[in-house]
Length: 307
Picture 1 (cartoon, rainbow, N blue to C red):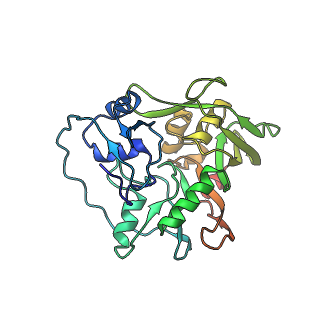
Picture 2: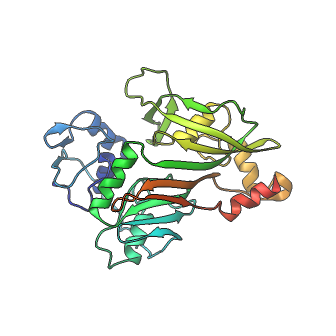
Picture 3: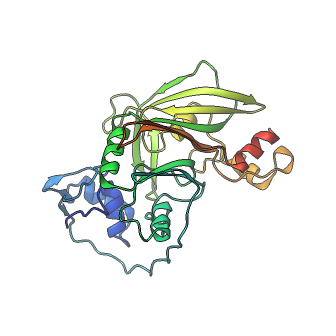
């Protein structure tokens, strides 16, 4: 099959998971690792970015009959910036950026449904489902290419607000530890810190600044110099200070207690406290520096008030 404009820019694994509905995720990754999936007649890795016109060969696989997909509701999200080239929205926590991996639809599908007149609308980057904050989309193919190049070459500035457990040491400002992606026994994607030089691990750099200390918690400003999967979550957890509410790498007993209102005088908090609060980039058409800010969501500010 040949990649069209709608699929261009996607990672190979996400593209395959979308077209091979009903095939176990573990099998999809297995045929990629074994070299059975070919891109332009060559081997490719799961994180290969597909371009329009690429030829993808997929081996025959048995696909179970998939249930009818849920209808995609039209939905707009709070707009932080928009012109003819770029759209930046404030994504709420709990909403995936796109469908796939057990999610019927995400931000991109809902926006396309809400904007049927849009001739082109694509995600420039990703945020985890549990993370809130600034999400950038392109409204032209040229804007998508230019912005993705900026992200790849680390020319963008991304800062997150993160509330972690415990007292973060103020002198711990740089985390430079390689990360390795793998699938757990359930086929879920996970990430861990590994020793430098480990095969397939990628260097990952996170900058940390203490904003405010509370009893048992610390609010951090976190800037990433590399955009790896789950980078902030894994780096902070590895340092012994997981993000409050993180369902994958966090303090599960604390998360449960906060969700039930068993801490902080009955106040309930049931999401991950990670928010993409600031993003700077060069406008793909004008070259101007665009600085965007997304305020902390009410549930996060309320938690800080209780602390």
